[in-house]
Image (tube, rainbow, N blue to C red; front, side, top):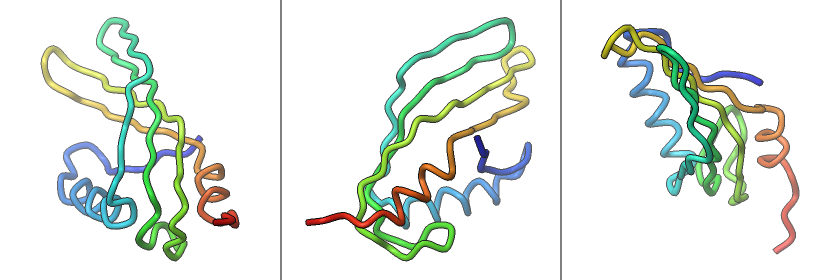
Length: 103
């Protein structure tokens, strides 16, 4: 599992990441599959995907539909979000981006 994102409080890096994401996958979607919480931590099991229409991590646009499972962790101190992590199988995504699709 590999994570993507930015460090705590790095709003500019988050904005850059989201801009790149929506250029590469303009129809990007997320489905919440399960939510669990314990103490100060919230875990979200989700599936995300979209159509690869722009460059992403060195892959030229393929038009491939991709779909990935992901885990998101949100940790709080009271009502303040203090940690946010996002992890998914990057190799699986790369295989979907490089796979030949017969149309």
